[in-house]
Amino acid sequence: MCLRATRSSRGCPCAGSWSGCCAASARLRSERRVGRSVLGLRERASEREDVFGQSVTEGGVRPPGSNTMTVTARLLRSGFIRYLLVLVAMWFSTPAHSEILNLDSGNIDDILGNADVALVNFYADWCRFSQMLHPIFEEASTIVKDEYPDAKQVVFARVDCDQHADIAQRYRISKYPTLKLFRNGMMMKREYRGQRSVTALADFIKQQRNDPIHEIQSLDELQTIDRSKRNIIGFFEQRESDNYRTFEKVANILRDDCVIQAAFGSVAKPERFSGDNVIYKPIGENSPDMVYLGSLNNFDLSFAWTQDKCVPLVREITFENGEELTEEGLPFLILFHLKEDTESLDKFQHEVARQLISEKGTINFLHADCDKFRHPLLHIQKAPADCPVIAIDSFRHMYVFADFKDLAIPGKLKQFILDLHSGKLHREFHHGPDPTDTAPGQQQSEEVQSSPPESSFQKLAPSEHRYTILKRSRDEL
Image (cartoon, rainbow, N blue to C red; front, side):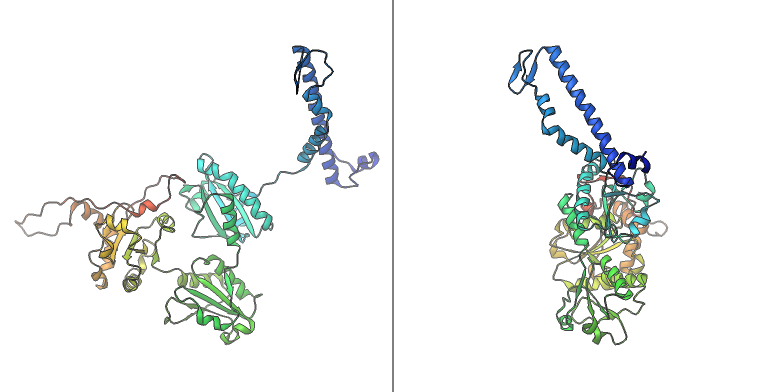
């Protein structure tokens, strides 16, 4: 025990510092332990020489009684042992430090909610891919923490899904390891699916710290913005305001979905005739601007409005985002079209918005490039020359919409989706068309057996060569 009176009376070098005294005591204890180990080595060396009648040196075997000291003795009498003593003393006096936070149901909301950016590793100890990731994840954390030492800027954390199954269920973990990104406690839709290396992980987090908002220096820049992309533009009196802080928070979450820009002060003044203002410029040169009419410092309203504008109802599926989309677990309604055929895409988007808006939570509306996705087309006995083609992939089978020209028939596309949900598409593919009422004396046609094409897009799902996939049944709705 460290006592002030004892320290002062014995001339303790800690100068009244409790921590200094404890550290000095730790060093003293470690030196004593190493000293005892050294004595033990000397005794064992002597015993070895007595038993075998010889001592081993750098030059080989010496006869008994030789004055040449052994390698062990040389090391003990050299400066090496003093250097070793210093290292051991430093090790004992240095507290253990870990960059990774272990999350549980008691601390997860507080830790993630106070972090600008958090990368969370959902793992299981028995999973070999999780075991391989652990040292990489820890080293990446150390590198990033050197650049962002503030715990509120960046957090690296992990969840043992075996011990905390409730957390795994909360975030719908279906594979190990899963690396999810959080911003101010909100889980991002896109998880990390990149290379599992120290450099790649560290670079990914550093990119997430970059400002997603481009500052407009002159309103003339608005005349040259890229109208092939969705643009959100804010006009503010100053950066240091609640309105801009809310705008910035929304921008960080939707940074991958929209081009986000902002103007301040005198540059923004012509667009601030009624105060701070946010507008949306949709795709298309002739598309009219849309103005946000809600409270600018209300995060929930701002986020909902911006997400609605930035995340399209009909998304494009690519080989880059295919894994992410399949893991959402919803069947696909896909328009296959040639890249230059924007007319078919416009018609499809219009009918989806008109007929299927209520189905948004039960099916993913997608469009795909015919040339890039030739294999799925071949699967349903189609070719790029047949495009545009509409099909459903339920992750068990693929079903083709009869004719693209029928798209404009009221309720036709809606019925196609309802037939999926009711099981009619699945049933008719296996057993032929459902029987209709027949008049007395008439015989029903014989049951026609058919084999529907198997799902093609399920091949884009997470690979068992990269993840441990949790076995779960995927019901066909």
